[in-house]
Length: 176
Ligand code: IMP
Ligand code: MG
Image (cartoon, rainbow, N blue to C red; front, side, top):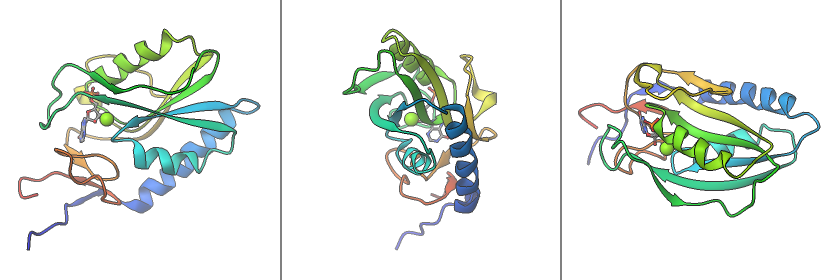
């Protein structure tokens, strides 16, 4: 049988502790406000589901699906909208929840798409950020972890559609 245990890069425990802190910060910042959380599929689905459990504010959950990677570990350079929101976000406080900011192209494209719909405010939460790869400036309001230039998998993140189910963040090695 195939060996299946990618190396642990960020453990479940570290992720949980960080998400507790992010949830507290978001709860505090949105005092007296409600919000629409936009989960960017597919990569952010586990992060987003854990994060919203720690946000103690009235919220609605929306999904959007964007894809830029295809099956490689490098961005294809163009972003496709695969599935749009189902709700009107005009006049709403929006919190976008992303898995990882790499070149920044996906989030730049998404920000443009969201801002033309006239929300009251837009904030960004991202589990991971690879500053070394950034090409398009982006402000991350709630960041999980800044990481070096490794291709990471697990906890929602995939390589060619695989490894999303890992409960921790691992590193893709040649052997995986
Ligand atoms: P960007 O548009 O270059 O910022 O890429 C962002 C998207 O690429 C993320 O939402 C991920 O889906 C994917 N991505 C970037 N780096 C990684 C990685 O290390 N592992 C898995 N997916 C990644
Ligand atoms: Mg993604």
